[in-house]
Amino acid sequence: MKHACYISLVLLLLLSSCAPSRVQEGARPGNRYASGFQLEDSAGCCLATVFSPWEKGKIMARWCLRREGELRPGDIRIPVSRIAASSCTHVGFLNSIGVLGALAGVCNPEFVYAPLDSTAGAREGTLNIGDGMSPSVERILLAHPDVMMVSTYAQGDAATQQLLKTGIPVIYNNEWMEQSPLARAEWIRFVAAFFDRREAADSLFSVVAARYDSLCAVSAAVSSGAGGRKSIVSGQDFRGTWYVPAGGTYMGRLFRAAGAEYKYNDDMREGSIPLTVEQAVQDFADDADVWVGVSVRSLEELKQVDVKHTWFRAWQTGEVYNFMRRSTPEGANDFWERGVVRPDEILADLIKVLYPDLLPDLPFTYTSRLNP
Image 1 (spheres, helix red, strand yellow):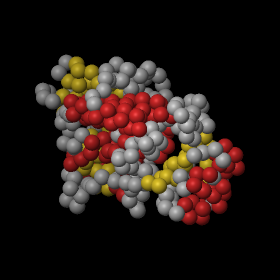
Image 2 (tube, rainbow, N blue to C red; image 1 turned 90 degrees about the vertical axis):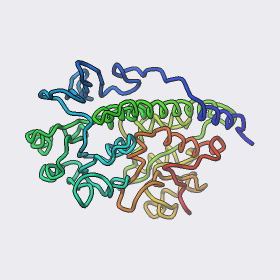
Image 3 (tube, rainbow, N blue to C red; image 1 turned 135 degrees about the vertical axis):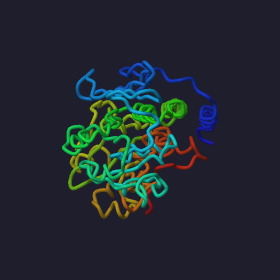
Image 4 (cartoon, rainbow, N blue to C red; image 1 turned 180 degrees about the horizontal axis):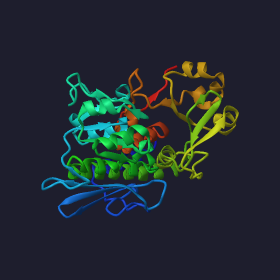
């Protein structure tokens, strides 16, 4: 079978223990990848610090997490028993360390993939605390959380400022500002500290990082061998604009790790690149072997969005994929929930899309090939 030697290598690497990855440049002391937080054991507490992603070295917030003893201003008793969250990604972290039952309230619960009907909170289930960009202070108070976790962009909004006045500790989670997939995943260690589950989080993250590194090694070996690397395109036309990830973004780094040939691999900007449809056609229509990240489930739907999509070779060969295998009609998608904690699973999906002979017996986790 083609690539047979590499298949054996994959199985060997995935089933064996791997040496820890080297520390990534820019990671905070005690972290292997993440730059946005730091955990330090000091004077009977775990000192949890979040740094500004915009002002180098500036501390956004710091909390002393105490298991026992007298609480002082700025201290938080751990383990936290009730938490409110503004983002589905926070739910992914909670679920991965086994504390989903502590979720008392969440913004936009329709976008949460994990089952919430058995979690703590209101008698009817986890309380809907409003929109993620403007959570309801009144509903948050009804949920009676010990802490409220918010994404960084919410730090200065009016609702958060009102919440701070209530005395509920507001925990800033900056994971989405990290560009490295493993740096985002490492925020599980930060979240776990509030539940006194650091050892469990460290153990899980070590498994994720080792598997991710093993997959990187395999894809690098195969994609540089006979036949060369396969090329990739991402996204689709949306109202005349086609956004593609730069090489420095979360998805751009995953493409590189998967061994994909990608036009913007060397563009290390940390944001999406807006293209006209004509530019996307020129850049990718004839060259891209596979097409990922579309928001439809069939090739016919993609054609209905814009007939120009049929000009792409990947559409003509049926090599088009979405990340909607674990999603709901309401819009929840586990790709942005569990997937943030498990970038190794996303990477495995991408390698399987590009080089299917490598992982023949491993099913897709988040990815589906479009129906005709």
